[in-house]
Image (cartoon, rainbow, N blue to C red):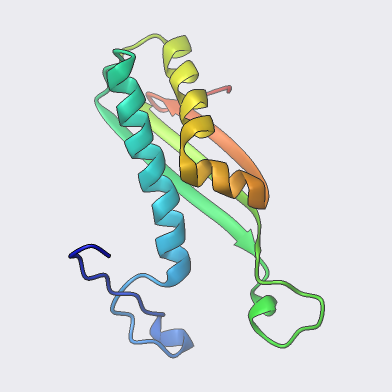
Length: 130
């Protein structure tokens, strides 16, 4: 990947040496990183200042799909994306940018086509409806 070296592994409990994130952890991290970069871009373009931004992503899939189970796919079934921001900006502006980010982020757009995505927004520790 360009000039970077990424280490990908599995936990020792499943036969790996635990020297790095597993492929699914990289995938979920990519969604969160993409959301944060996209958020920062739109925040700058729209004049939204913030003190901190954190995105966590979880997904559910049936591990049996990696085995020889007939009719069970190892695909993600749903996702949860939580955006946590600290900012003194108006809630409506934060909500507007968050919705735009979910729509314009390539990774969020991709997972939305794979399964149900539940988005949650927390501003200064309080959940805000989207």
